[in-house]
Length: 331
Image 1 (cartoon, rainbow, N blue to C red):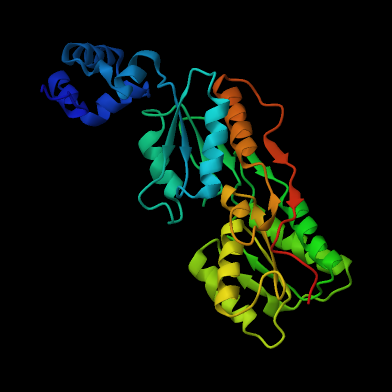
Image 2: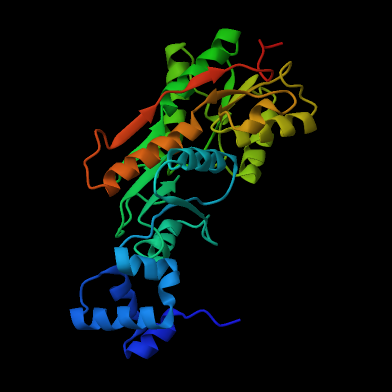
C-alpha cells in the first residue's frame, strides 16, 4: 500500500519548513503568496489534498466542529448528543476530543492548539478549567469557568436548581441538611453552593460548616467527605450533592455504613443523567436539560461561524426538581 503523504513530505518537496507549510495550510500571515502557491502545487502533486488539512488549504475550512471534554462521562455524553442533533442538518461534522491530560488545568489550551485552524472551524468547551482561551476559531463554553470571561457561554440555572433541591428537603421536614460541593472553579458549582445556603437562610437555619464537604466531582473525594459527614454523632438527615455522580457515591457510602436511603438519609443530586433513574433506589435530582445545553451551544457557535452577532452571548436554561426514591421525611 502506498504511504500517505505527510506535511513533512510537502515541506521537503516545496523547499520550505513544516511551520511554513502549516501557515500556508491555514491561511496565516507571514508567508509570501508565491510560497503559498508553491506549497499548494506540491500538495496537489503529492495527492495530499485528500486529508482534512489539505481540504482546509483550498477552502480555508474543514467542515468540522470540535467538542472538547475533559473526560467522556455521563454529563459530557449527553452534551455530545445535543450537539450532534443540532448539527444533523448542517454541513458540519462533529469531532469529540478529550486530551490525554484532561484533568489538568489548562488542558483546553493544548487541545485547541492542536485542533484550531487545522482540524476544526469552531469549538465548544465543556466545563473548562480556564477563563479565556486564545484561539483562531470561534469558541463557546458550556458550564463555564468562574470569573469574567469574553467567551459566549451556555449554562443552566444552577442557583435556582439548588434552591429547589434544598427547599424540597426542608419541606419534607429536614433541618440538618448536608452539601457536598463540586469543582470550585466552575460558575455552576459556586451557584449551587449559594442556592443551598440561601434556602437555609430563608428557612431561618444557621449553616453548620461541618455539614459542607468538598467533592470536586471526584468520586474518591466525595467518598471521603461523605464518610466524615455520616460518621458524625449529629450526622445530617439529608444531603444535597452538586451532581448525580456524587449523589450516587453518597448512597453507596451510606449503604456501607448501614444507613438506609431514604429512611435514615435523603439524598438529592443534580443533572439527571440517564443512570439517575436506573439506580436502586432511583435518585431524586435536579434536572438540567443537558442535550439542550449542547444544542444551544452548537446553534450559538454556528451563528458566530457565519459571522453574525448572536442575540445573547450568555444563555441560561431552566432546571427543575425530579423527586424519586432517595428522599423521604426524616425518620
